[in-house]
Each structure stands twice: as C-alpha cells, then as structure tokens.
Image (cartoon, rainbow, N blue to C red; front, side, top):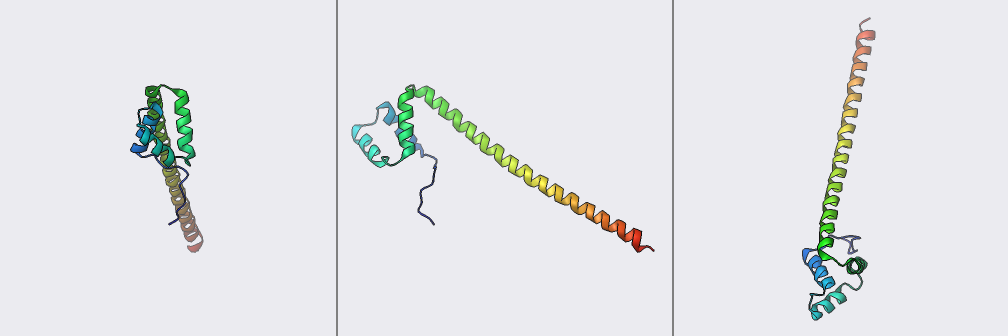
Length: 115
C-alpha cells in the first residue's frame, strides 16, 4: 500500500466538532494549541477555519453544511444510477445485435441452404 495522503478524506465527527469548537472559541486553550499544531500543514483545515470565521453565524453555517452534504450524496447517487443505466443500455444493444445476427444467419441458411 502506498503511504500517500488522499486528496480528500471525509472528516471524522470528532474533527468536525473540534473545528466548530475552535472557530467558536469554546475549545480550551491547551486543546486549541494542540489542534493548531496537529493541523498546521492541512490546507483544507486552514481554509475551513478562515471561511467559518468570516461567516460568523454557526447555526446558519451548520444548516448550509448539512444541505451541501445532502446534495453531495444525491449527486453521487445519480452518477451511480447513470453508470448503471449505461451498462444496461450497452447490454441491451449487445443482445439486440446478437439477435439480429442470429436472424441473418437463419435467413441465409434457409434461403441459400434449401436449394
């Protein structure tokens, strides 16, 4: 296995809650410092903190976050359905072509083989 970092990993619930506590200022200073030291090289964390600090209202942000997560799940589901539909369509085309070839072979067999 490769030890490369994934470009995006789903945040753990503890990380998400720590982010909210950090932004709201309710995290104890010792834990905030440990969190900063742990996340210093994480550009996603830094961007999230900056964005949340600029927006301010945490309840509104949580609602928007929940809506975005829901939309992401719907989008991912629709892509899976599209791929599934494409596979079924490809199978149907293949079956249709095989049936037409079988009919063509039968036609030539009975038309030219009967003489």
